[in-house]
Image (cartoon, rainbow, N blue to C red; front, side, top):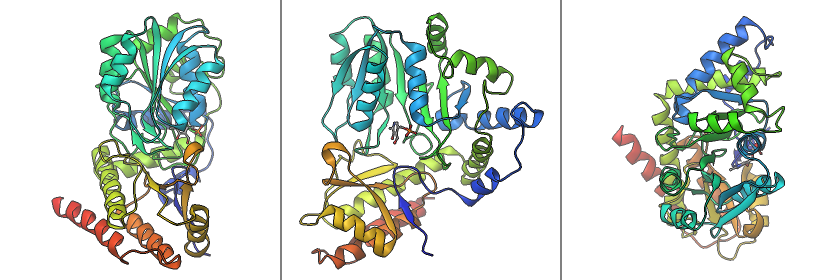
Length: 386
Ligand SMILES: Cc1ncc(COP(=O)(O)O)c(C=O)c1O
């Protein structure tokens, strides 16, 4: 009876308008109606990527689009750099290794970001780097890497193709693909894009297309040249996720109704600050610094003296509040509060209030209401500015 309050880093809640759009009658993916839907929708989603390039739609999770970037750009034996600041950077390393690439790994501590200087110094020691891979928003730690600055380092110290995993960022974090010199930007539907899982979105720069054209890639289903060819006709090479594309059109309506994508980005920033200030007020530590804090997910350290598994289980069972635990080395040490996509300041007030109720149940020492008050102050000051 009670709805699950899903505060995860994806899948995330789906707006009713999107659900209804996805419930429309099915259409053929080779029909004129589909071509109109595809052309209009891929055009309208461009501001979310910050690009003039075409947006390609794959009927897949984000991983397939990451793999498409790897297999279309590189060949076995190529030298590549992967910046990894957590579980999803490591994931990129695994994909590259599986394709026989010679991976130079720039590893940072989980919870830290990679700076322009660090990437620049790393690249100075290397040559013939074909591609540099970076995770924009590290979902396992809530770190937002400064990809604009990292793109500068890539251009200053190499001719590499700059490939960015934007899976848990795009739709909530600022994205200026063209301005930041990103050559391939990838995201998935089920996070900040307000859709169910099953659709990946990807854009490719002119520089990257030249590399793809001259690369003898073995990709078939993931061939980006094939996607480009069909995109010219307003279609995809194989059967696409038609209902999700109908949903994506409704997502574009919602972003436009909010006042444009810059307003969506602002809302995510406000929610990030609400969560962070409320944890400060409860004297509960955060994993990351404010400077590199993600606008879509916050990693919160286990409150002192609490058994995290029991606490999260209790929140879910008693209050229907569903947070995600930590991954890898952070399991049991942090939990992750998702605030992306169809999420609003009122949802943050609700989640912080229920978190406090759970803390009281565990006799955790804190001033009841302090977290909610701090979150409310951030929200009210953002409303006053409007
Ligand atoms: C940053 C990041 N990259 C890649 C992925 C993998 O995406 P998918 O599970 O849609 O294949 C995820 C999923 O959580 C992610 O957060």
